[in-house]
Length: 143
Ligand SMILES: [Zn+2]
Image (cartoon, rainbow, N blue to C red; front, side, top):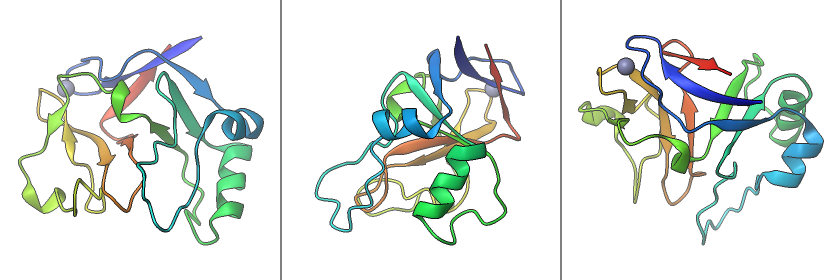
């Protein structure tokens, strides 16, 4: 069953149709979760065509792998930047567009729907993973 991301404000589809990765076995098989200090190559943790569901056992596994990360245990979804559709642009708010070679994604949502709603956060810098995290307040999933 495939799922796609939509804008809560205007109901535009924001992503390709994706397969969920929702267990540790599939995550370890499909995702590239290296924490390479040198970042000599771009790391895209989630392969195109998939969405990693950070909840339940996947969440616990990530908390174990990166002590101190997400201590409240918020559910998140991680996606490949290549699965965001073309109508999703960049915010005009330059305070959210910090980065070295790309966007570090550390200042809140930086990608906008064509209706201007802040739909998620891209990270794409030389020292970060390259991925997209939807803003749950502004988006919803449909199967
Ligand atoms: Zn919209």
